[in-house]
Image (tube, rainbow, N blue to C red; front, side):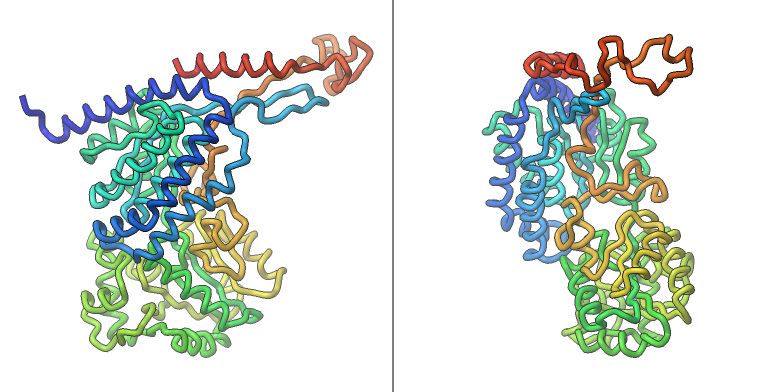
Length: 496
């Protein structure tokens, strides 16, 4: 009997989960060195295939630029790997001899990895590396419009991982992408954590699944050009950022905000560096094209060239040399589509009377869409930077850098990541740039340092001194071999 597509996809997920569950039992017994060997192999293979996979992604989705997709693949394969290479995720992570505690790293278990169409291949490389580094199997749920390039990337990293000792089933992927399959993956008892990178509806579904999840909200970052900024460099960084991969990184700038006395200089510099400022009529035409009738982003603008967007929106006067479309805006919220996230080559431009109004506008934009994500500022006044950093609802405040690349840790010293947590204000469980340490649990071993009599006498803070010493007395000895065996036993039990 031939099953319907949704039933076949659900059965595929259950098979992948059973395989991942078996893989988890084997991964639980691996040492840090064995996990590191696996991540090194993934890094090497992904770097070697970075260009081919980037080409596949653009050809299949129509989003972005091949050269920039290749850079993102290499960023995930090489820059991320270098950042995590020496990181310890397995076994004893820390000992506090004074307080007599030990921290032990434990893998969380099977991870569900949701993959967007905007960054499909780099996301697979990134999530495979951080999951294998932490000792967790991962099953990918691909976006239907990017399934082929995602499947091929999974194949590349899976072969590399298994050649380095990863058990079969450690890295899997749904080949029949359906909503039913994704829901089954997220809600199944074998799934221990969801890494959700994608549209708002998918991230919300992940948090509603009943399974612990790390999701990212929409990015809609405003960029403030302060009066102390080098205007030429600020505009260059913003345009470099916005045009990188045609604006498909969520941390890229969505609007520029200036005080009125800066308007002329900034607009002039934008035009000089290739931005096209829309007329009132062009503003009206494009505004009706940015969002769909349900208020969500129109996929026709995502990752497309200025020429393509202008043609689709009926803008006849945009020169072929234009790098970005800039629309002067006065409001935020419903009825002001330029105030929304636009993963394409469109920037809103706000002019405010003073710095207080600028700050209010930045907060308003982020609270409308983009809360907890990213804010950027171009300024040489550190006190202004600190003031805005303390006030805006953003998890990343980027200073004098291209926001798209600064947010992911390419032009800053933030942790290199392609999943950027938005914190509680953005509906996310984490505000981190997500890495392997977000994918482990920490088991804590603690020796007693007081007796009940100390508590009753009110000496709650007194150290345990029955042997004449303190918390750091010589009787505190850790048998490392015994502790390693204890760790292996704990992880074997957790994998059952």
